[in-house]
Image 1 (cartoon, rainbow, N blue to C red):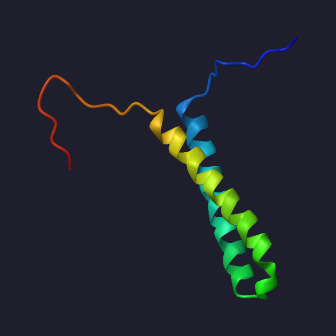
Image 2 (cartoon, rainbow, N blue to C red; image 1 turned 120 degrees about the vertical axis):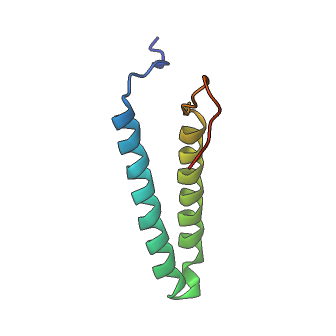
Length: 81
């Protein structure tokens, strides 16, 4: 029986490309939602599908962000900015 691959070998550039693609998808969904909201109210089911898709995209972006490990120097006090 086939199993899922639990290890991925993605570079930082790969993850960056995935994030950019998800953000572009979010922008397109937002444009679609605005276009439909300006039209007939009978299109409300279409809007709810778009909103669900937007929510899933944002949650995926959040999960990607939460898996990142950000570098912070430990040898001396960190001063941002």
